[in-house]
Amino acid sequence: MHPCSQQLKHLSEKHFVAHEILGLLRSQPNMTPVNIVNEMQCIHCVQISYKVAWEARKVTQTIINGNHEDSYAAMPSYHEQLLEANPGSLFTLERTATNQFHRLFLCYYASAKFASRAKRGEYDEELIMEQLALNRSFFGDEGLG
Image (cartoon, rainbow, N blue to C red):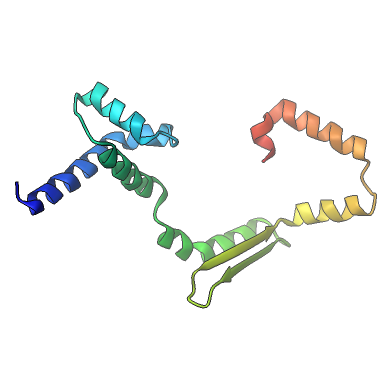
């Protein structure tokens, strides 16, 4: 087989698999390439390599989440939306000399206000711990982050 034909076959396999696993990765975003190989074998009776599964997963993640460049380009809009929804919050985006992302600092106004009051002793530590316990029982540990 000619090398160009092999590359085209590999590319088409990767996109076929990406299309087939799109729904699975939406519901199971931590799915591994090994799981993808197994799913393709079980559901479609198709043998694919680990490499094809890995690359199909990357294609699918880009379809679901977008790419880094688009996400970075959306930062100014995100900044505006965040400050509109959370007045008084601090949002600082730092870039390198080549205009690449360096770091982001975000401090919500409500958090800063709470920390300031707690530092001045306006909040009782027992009351805070009680509130955290209530939040855990209502939201679970995931609801606290």
